[in-house]
Length: 147
Image (cartoon, rainbow, N blue to C red):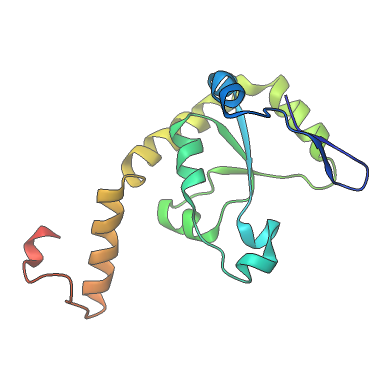
């Protein structure tokens, strides 16, 4: 299921117009399309390209992500967990992916395992603290053994 758009790009109809309908269909979703906000809303994000929660949510939901990964994500985990869009034929690409979705299961499983390792807030805060301490900042607390 997908949203419907007019030829000028304006939204005509949401695929899931209510939270209830979205929640009812979430278990059926196989692909999530996701881009950094600097791509979709540059007027809001400017040049800021950052990892957002939706990438972790997609990986933890065991969905295949199609779109573009923020550099912060690929730097953190060491690979690109997103299938980059083929801008020459995006509809054909999605049709092909859906027709061969089982071929992506190993990739989805890898993303899930990596998300389990990196996505939790306790792990992310430890990483941030470690980076700040390595840069000479000790303003969090005196007990550095917790890092």
